[in-house]
Each structure stands twice: as structure tokens, then as C-alpha cells.
Length: 431
Image (tube, rainbow, N blue to C red; front, side, top):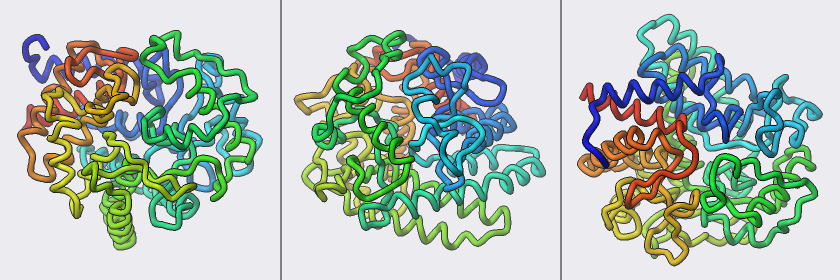
């Protein structure tokens, strides 16, 4: 890395990225590779936007909520119909308009990790206009409750309080090694033609393989052809640490929003505790972190990924000391990584440039830094956040980087990278 940019320089450059990717109602993850609105991206983006324009951050989240289904799900993607030929699978693949209880805007049928209530609470807190903030809280609290009710009521398919993902895309970590064994059971021959539009914007070596995409599309077809109904016989059912950690963390945020709008915060706190306790069933002592559980086989997936470190975000975590040691150890940060690797660097199949199979992502480093600070490692958290903002600016806000060298990969001018850099820079400047 060259030099140490000041906070103002980071914020100016990052705001320019978010302005470039702004559509007038929401922010694109990146203008080329990702031409629609993505669910957990918008929540991360709102976290950064709140420092510069709380009103626009509110609009970001409410634009996403306009795509919510009647059953409460917040979809993975809200499509821009004008850009349907620019991303696969598009709105015509999902045919959401043919299903009952779907919104007027076209969406995917899948979901993504539930960081939205946490983002909404932080946006509420950042708005200096008390009346506007209160109105925002009153508008978003009911749909966010419905979203959590969907995950709790329809996605707890493993006979536990933990929510399941029914597709790797729902985890946000598409080709994580956590999914390898479950995907290997599936065909890689979908009926739908797999158009790799992503390769227009990133090299094949940085993206999931053709076989992985074949399985992704086959699995999406199965879910779509079943009218996106959640059943315990679906071919892919896994309990993921990050999805459930963010659910538990967002329940704490819902408890705060409930207090603001005059609702009972008690059930949210109780559900936070329930999910936190249930996460212990995903802990793998041999690896020193949480892993996914394959509901179909009942087995834990013994792969050490960044998803297994995110439970550090939870304040009352029985395994916190062990998780901190694992994060600081040889699998992740012990070798001097600049940001948190997405996969165990000691694994034989670690790949520093291949999507979720090794590179460091800015949102995940941001999450783990929050968790390390919460559990007694402020120095490591500060170092990670400093590297996050410096690498973001130096490399034009890349999608992800080599954790050891900081070399950029994926697309550039990536919105959540810019948003995380804003959040870090502003907090550093005001601390």
C-alpha cells in the first residue's frame, strides 16, 4: 500500500462511487456486473450512506422493501426490467409476476442474509431530523418484523431455531467451500441456457466455474418450478453461520426499533437469545469456529471459512474466546493477512483470487472487525479497518482483494466497498 490517505480523501472518493452507482431510488452494487438492486448490498450501502445522507440511506432501504413478498421475504434481487438482458438469471427466469403474493416490481424468489434491521437501526440513529427518523422507523418496523417472521416461520426447516438457505446465492457467498459437498450431489445440467454475462466484467479465474454455475442454475430452476415454496425436501438445505448471526444481530436492532415505535421489544430479545444459543450446534471444535450444517444429511460441513467467524458480532457468545483465537491464528490473520481471508489460508484448495474461495471481502472484514472489537481485540480491529479503507481507495474500491498482498480482484467501484470505507473513515475521524 502506498502512503496513508486522510479520512476526507477516502470519504470523497467513496461518495463519488456511491453517487455514480445511484439510480435515483437505490444504489447498484456496480454498474456493469450488477445492474439491479441486491438485498444485503443495499443494507451495507445504507450503513455507509447514513454518514453523508441519512435521508438517502432511508430511501435505499425502503426501495428494497418495495420488493417484499406477502409472505415476508425480502428478495435477493429487485430487478430493473430495462436491464433484464444484462444479468443472468434475470426477471424472466424467475417469473415472479406469475405467483400470488408477489410485488408489482419483478424480483428473484431467493433471499439473502438479514442485515436489514441492523442497517435500519443505524440509519435511524444517524438522522438528525428526529421527526423524519421517527417516521422512517414507523414505516420500516412492520415489514422488517414480517421479514424475520418469514425466516423464523418458513425457513427453520432443520428442526432447530436456525434459518436455512435453499441456494448458495442466498448466503451471499456463492461458491464458498461450505457448499461443495451439497452441490456435488446435484446435476450441473439445467434446462436453462447458462449465459455467463459475468465474464464480460471479470476474468474466469476470479468467478465460479462453469460446473458450479450449472448447478446454481439447476437448483434455481427447482425452486422456481416449485413456486418458490419452502419445503423440507428441497435438494439444498443448509444452516449457515452468517445468515443466522445477522438474524440474531438484527433482532437486537428490532428490539431498539420496537422501543421507538411503541412495540414490545421483549420477543426480539428473546429470539436473539434463542438463535445465539442455537448457533452453538454449528460449532466445530477441531476447527475452532462455526460451520454450516447440511440439513439433508445432518452433518456439519467441516470447512473453515469467514462465515464461521461472524458470530463474534453477538455480545453473549459462549465460544467467543475460541473464535478470537481462530481469527488471529494461522487459518486467517496469523500469517499477516491485511484483511480477513474468506477461506482457510492453510487449506490445500485455498485460492487468493477466486471469489469466495480465498480472497478478502470488504463487508466480511468489516463484520469481523466489529466482532473482534466487541470481544476484546480493538488493536486488531483497528488494523483491519485501516487496511480496509486504504486498500479500498488505492485500488478504486474493488470487489475483493488478495488477503496477503491486497491485490485487487473482481469489478471496481463496488458500492459496499465504498460504503464500508466511508463508515470506517468517518468513525476514525470522530473517535
